[in-house]
Length: 219
Ligand SMILES: [Fe+2]
Image (cartoon, rainbow, N blue to C red; front, top):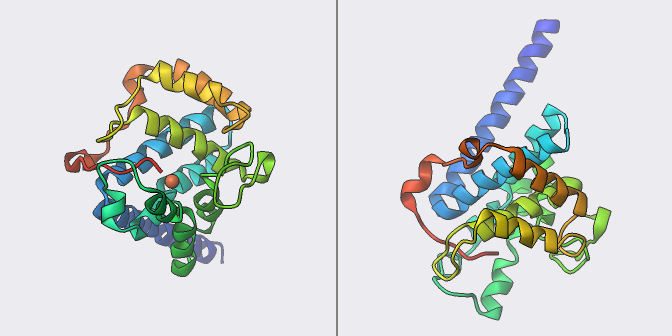
C-alpha cells in the first residue's frame, strides 16, 4: 500500500516536472529574452526565499512560479513583444494583458496551479497602482510580491534595444527608493541583503538559451 502511494506520488511529481519543462520550452520557442528573463527572475526569487528563510518546498514553488511568470507573453503578437522601441499606448495595453493570458493558459492546461496567483499578480504594485486588479499591500499574494521585486531588478539590469542596463548598485538603489510604493519593503530588504552577501561568482545564472539573444519590451 505504502509503495503504491509512493509510486502515485512519484508519477504525479514526474508529470508536474515534465509540464514545467514543456512550458519552459514553449516560452523559449516564442522568445529567448523572455525565457532568459524568467530563468534569472527564478534565480533571484530563490535568493530572496533563502534570505527570508522560506522552507525548501515553499521556495521551490516560488521558483517555479517565477519561471512561468511571463508565460502570457507567448500569446502576445511578435511585432509587439519584439518591438525595438517603446510601445504605443494601445500596444502597451495589449502587452499588459499578459498576466491574465498566462493564468488562462495554465488554467486551460490544468497544471501548475500554485503558479496561477504569481502569474496573475506579478505586476501589481504595493501602493495599488499596478495591474491587472490594482491590489495593494498584503492583498497581493506574497509570492507575487517577491516576483515583482526580482522582475524589476532583472529588467533594470538587462540590456534592451532602447534601454541600457544599469549596474547592480544603482538597480538596488532603485528598489530601495520604491520601497512601500511599488514594492513590499520587507522583500526589498531581504533581496538587498541577499545580493550583498551572495558571492559574485554565484550571482548570475546564465541559461543555455543565451545564444538566441533576442530582445523584448520591459512590461
Ligand atoms: Fe511580466
